[in-house]
Image (cartoon, rainbow over all chains, first blue to last red; front, top):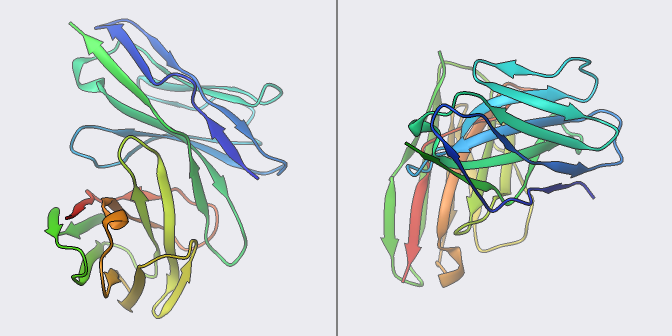
Length: 117
Length: 113
């Protein structure tokens, strides 16, 4: 079965510094997708970045980049130049495609990031 | 652009009472729709998904049911709430198909007393 592991329950970083949030995954599928979502205290899950298993280059979206190491089955999120508004829970998720025209997201337990001024 | 709405935002209900949570999507047609539940301090668990009107599939056996009476409307219901139904309920949509990103609504925080 597919599994996502986030080993850092909490992280803190100084404003304007970079931070890496860890994510490892387990799957026997050859084709899969990996996502990062941000959940601020309001509760909404905000999509940040996506990496496909066949993508040769690491995904980037503004200050977010995904450090994808396929052989190690890791998909770490790097946030550059942290801002106070980055303080939130961050979830790594893997897309599972059971068949039937839909996909299912398997979520990790999350990492709470605190950005200090 | 597409937007997704959920209501109510918060709800406090007694054990044994009925439940109806609503989710609507604007700006798209024939989306896939999903209901997730998040227990306190945990990740999300998929409860139901729908690929079209009247087409509902359940991921886990439970006290809840779902319906899709219109293309862009997804409803989560229960006839009798249990204490264990408390949690944060999130609705999500994606473009039809199996490979697209899911986008989430603002969520409903349900407390069953």
